[in-house]
Image (cartoon, rainbow, N blue to C red; front, side, top):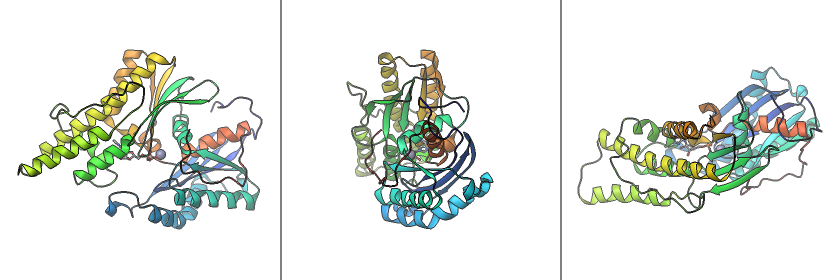
Length: 346
Ligand code: KG4
Ligand code: ZN
């Protein structure tokens, strides 16, 4: 693995345990001298019946799961506690209680075993999901980070400095998928279900509006409200419930609108910033419509497109351990006074 960050002055060959508990996935991973040795994700099922993440339940489940998940990751990697040099942990952004569970665990472990501690920004983690496996994007590249909590356009420059040039003004793209899916009675998280249903529908069936802001920011509240009104108006007019074909058309039309908003902003960003590649990261990068549209855009712009495999798109600790590895090599360590920062920006 090539090195990120300039002037390495830290541990040249760290053995890193990564921990991620920012939302509703309890995850741990091990990176040994730059290579991913294991990755374990325990997705919390408890939220399903509420149609969204319940923060208090997430914290309690993290407490229950963190120890077995870490144990599993170490065992799968064939690494003993005494082999570790470093513990990397997400310290923000995310749910305060959830972050605190992983962070307290990581700090206690670092203190007890005299390990280096590296706090990782969850969004930086998503960027590093592009560096878990070869090939890596060449620098500088433009990365669209699209998850349940964030929608951001980030330029990653030659020195691994990040510049956010666009962000959502209201909902995140994944949040829009989840809210529309909830409205349609789909299980949480709804993004993958909408994606699957959209594949059998006509994307031009319903002319949902596209919000294109003059800068590189995004807004998804308009499309969300349009879908709500569409569903409400049908019910008010006494229309029968959507059949399979109608549901597929609605999902396809909604997805096409969201994808077009995302891809147009990426296209416009490319006219402003000289980059060598396009990357996409975060849960929504698993979306098949988005992948296809970005592939077409990359071909038009003659740039390479880098998308992590689906397991690295959604929340995981491999990306945190890999980001932690690079920071540890560069000597960017954190103190034991590190605190959770729920609103941390990139
Ligand atoms: O990155 P992630 O696991 O968690 C956050 O950091 O938020 O992203 C989860 C989000 C959820 O909103 C989920 O519905 C969405 O990613 N998602 C998708 C797909 N797979 C996951 N959205 C659209 N299409 C998909 N295939
Ligand atoms: Zn995430």
